[in-house]
Every structure is written in structure tokens, then in C-alpha cells.
Image 1 (spheres, one colour):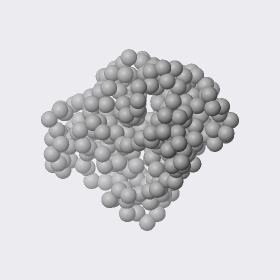
Image 2: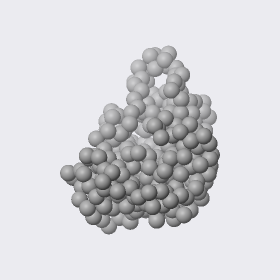
Image 3: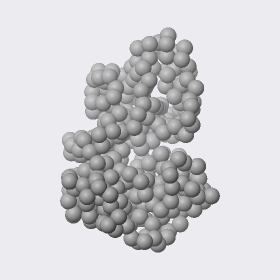
Image 4: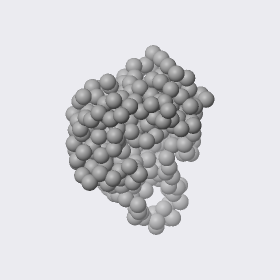
Length: 322
């Protein structure tokens, strides 16, 4: 079967590997035929060659793992050892081994769910990040009538903006150094700040501090402290971005004096929240079509990741299809 792997920083290679078969499945797993994948911001450190912590990341120049680093996937069930999945089902969710960029993928069935059959696979793959956003919002205080700011207006930040507004946020501010005025209104952003988060904080009036700040950037340290500095007294900061460092220095004095709450965490209860994402997308027709702005063939994987790694105003979500 075909497979793509990172053989050096910024370098994918197509390889032929032995087929993954039904006999190799463990209890609870399913075997999928690849239908679509989504490029996530958390995939990009691996693309750049950063040494990860997955057990199979043992390459000398890059991870060199078959199918890595894709985890957002849509597939057709070819075989199953999970009670909730049937052969022929089309499902969306997590490639649990971060091995989704290959023809046949084995995955944990608890991280997959069927979806609206009317959706193209390239659009359906967006249900996975949407599920993550909806789960994160469940961890926050009630946002109905509150002011929310989202630092980072990439693919995940725009989903946070949209979902926060749909959940009743009074005012949503989106902050990004890339111009997002063209899509801001489509994703529920009331005020689009075309600036870095440090500049936004420095010019933020006390009376304009939001009740909730979501850090949707990740992969560096500074923006978490900008979120802590920006949020109103008694407010909540949710750190959603993936950390590349074990330890992040934050201002505990600000946390203490302003009675702040800092939350973070990975997405749990995946089948349930994937179902919620499917329902949300049905209630908001057009969202996923606006969200997935670029689609590449799997033979163009290199191009897809190169685009994902560049700051481009017109790009939101990138999908990869056979």
C-alpha cells in the first residue's frame, strides 16, 4: 500500500509498505481505507523535523514513521473489532497512531464516529478539529453574554471564534498577525485585530478586557502570558495550543492578584464530541465549506504541508484526498 513518511525536515517521501490487514487489528480497533485527511497545526513541528515523543519517532533526520504526522482522518471501514462500527461505514476522527497518511489505517474505534453522509470527505474531516473545540468550550464557564478573545486566527482559532459566537458570546475578538478581515465575519469575529498578541495587550484598555481568552497558537511560550495579561479580573484563560516545551513560565502574581483561572487539556470522550460536531455542522450549513479552503491530492502532500507552514491570508483549513 502507499504511504508517506517524513524522511528529513520539510521532506515527505512516498513509499510502498506492506498492507495493514484485518488480522493485525487489536480489540477495539478498526481498519480504514483512506478517504481524506486534515493538516493540523500540531502536525507542523514534525514536518519541520522536531524530535517528537511518539514511540516510533526514531529517525535520524525526521520521524521517518509511516503515515506520520496525520491524525485527522476520514475513512471507510474495511474491517472492525469494535462493537459500534460496521464494514462499509464512513467515519471521521482520530488516526490514533498519528499514522493517517497511508492507504489503509488501523485506528482506535473509540476515536471515530459516522457522519452526515451528504458531506464530502474533504469537508467531513473538519469535524475532528470542531469536536476538539466543542469539548474545550465545555470546560469553560458559561460564555453566553460574555466577551471572548481568541489569540490566533488560524484554522483552530477561527473555529473557536465561530463556536463561541454560536454559543452566545456577546463579543468575539480575534487576534492574529495575518490579515483575517476577509473571513472574520464568516467565523463570528466581531473585532479582527491585525497585530501580534503582545501589541494587542499593550494597547488594550482596562474596560475592554475580555472575560475569556483562548490561546489557540501554541508551539511557543509568549502568547500564554499575553492571554493571562489580557483577561479581565476573575476571568478564564484556556490554553489550547500544543506546547513544544515541558515548562512554561507564567506570571503567578497576575494569576493571584486577578483571581484568574487557567485551564487546558486534551480532548476526551471522543465519540460523543465527534457526534456533537456532526450535529453542530448540520445546524450551521456552509460552515465546513467555508472552513476547508484548500484541497490537495495525496500525491501533493509536500505542497499541502508547505502551504500549511506559511502564513497566508487566504488559507484556513487544508484537506488531503486520494
